[in-house]
Every structure is written in structure tokens, then in C-alpha cells.
Length: 361
Image (cartoon, rainbow, N blue to C red; front, side, top):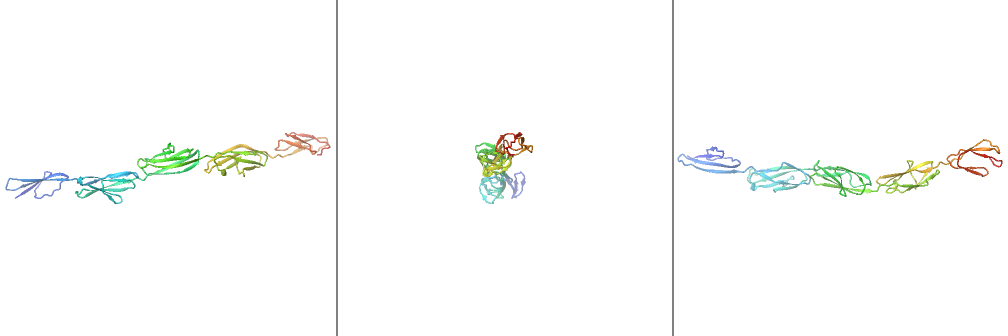
């Protein structure tokens, strides 16, 4: 005649000898009371249950890292029997490491898994995954590496940047004296001295990168020349004397009144009368150039042509004859007679000469 009554944690009752219960998370008390139909005595006892929270592994959903960054994954879990936690990480390549933290050097994007167990919970373990995104490595490419140029030439440099944290690039161009030249992707300057320029790039995430441009500055050509035998009648052989510096003589260009000429063994023959301006253009092997001119440096006189007329056409002995000088390109004139006599005149005035009977016509 025994009667069994269970008092449940929610204060409801159940009348049965055996009780199948599903305790809630936390502490619960179940009380059993025993009655019979004979005595007024009641017996009872209580059962206290403690249910731990469900075991749960914990990792962030994802994280973005710059190439070569160092990052540590820390194993975290909740619920279950904390005193008996064991952790392991499964790496993107499928291998596993038992540890409660995992140091990572970011190289490639991958999925990492955390596994936690406590030897108590059902299921016996829980997992959590994290996607670690690795940005491409920070890189730069210079348009020009080592370069040779003439003094005072303009140097144009630029760098092409990729990878890393785009939009956060910081660029610095610095010369070998430590002088800041630019913070832009391009650099323009006049090169006066040999040395080097370092361009560095950071993105506040990746390891800084740097590259070096070596600059070799050569002297600029300086054109200079002199001339010999610069005045005379045609043909006139002029001598060209090149005294230029920092140039390649094989690249010389000589000019006479802007026409290119080619002196052979430093000699050039002018065959036409006139005044000539002479120029010289020089270059070095870098094609840097200089030029100089001597204006109206050469004078080639026209070749004189002797000619005259007489009047009258028929001459009588003892009568004067008029001689008209029609010569060209001359400054001085010599009149020579048949008997060997002569006279010099410097003008073209009409000249009268009286013929004697001893003078042949």
C-alpha cells in the first residue's frame, strides 16, 4: 500500500515510483515522499542535480592580416567541465597541434579549426572555425634602377605598388644625404651629383619595403673650337680646331651657315665667296649635347675679274684715249702698258692716257 510522490523543481508533482527527469542547466532538487495506508508516518528524501552548460568552442569568425604579420589564436570555450578542457587546432593543411594557443605567421589565406573536449559532455567535443585572410605581400617595382645621365639632366623616377593594405600606402624618396625628396609615387629632379636614392613604402600593416636607385652623373659636354686661315680667296682651306671637353669627337657635327659640312682631317675647302658663320654641335655617349657658334667668322672674297673698255674705238697718235675700268671684285688696280710701264689706282675713275708714236697700241 505504498504511495510515491515526487516534488519537481518547478513545484509540480509526479506520482510514480521511478522518475525519468531532464534536469535544466544549473542546480535542481527532486524530493520523493513515501506514504502508506496504515500509519500517519511519512518518509522522504531529496536528490540534488547539477547540470553543466553545453560545451562550446569559441573563435572569431574571421580576421584579416597583412603578409608576414604575426598573430596568435587563443583557444576559448564555455560550458562543460572547465577543469578538464583539452584543446587542439587543426591547420589548413590538415595537420593538428594540441595547444591552448597557436602562433601564426601570415603567409596564405586558410581556415583554422579549434576542437575542445572535457571528457564529460555529450557530444564529447565541440568545434569552431576561423577564416584567416592574408593580404598579398606588399611589393613595389621601380621604372628605373641604376641610371647614368649628364649633369643637370632631369631624372624621372616612379614606383608601382601592389599588395598590402591598398589606400594606406606611405611613400618616401630619400637621397644619400638623408634629404626627403618626395612622398608621391613619382619623383622629378635635376641630377647634379652621383649618389643613390632610396624609396620606401609602408602601409601600417605589412613589413616596410625599400628599393634603391643608383645615380651616376657624368659631366656635360662643353663645345668649343677655333679656326685658322679664315680670310682669303676661293678656294679657301679652313682649319677646324676642336677644343671641346667631355664629348665624343666622332659625334661632332660641323656647320657652315647652318649647312652640315664634313671636314677631312680638320680641313674644309670653301669654294664660294661669302661670309660664313661656323658652328659646332658635340655629344657624348649619353647623347647629351652642347653647341657653339662663331658668327661671320670666315670671309671668302669673290675672285677678281679684270676688264676695261676704251674710247674712242679708233685711236689717233698723239690723241688721248679714255680707259673705263669695268673689273669686278677688286679693290686695287694696276694698269700695265705695252712698253712695261705701269700705274696703280685704287678707284674706278675714268683714266685718260695719251698715246705716243713710240707706244704700241
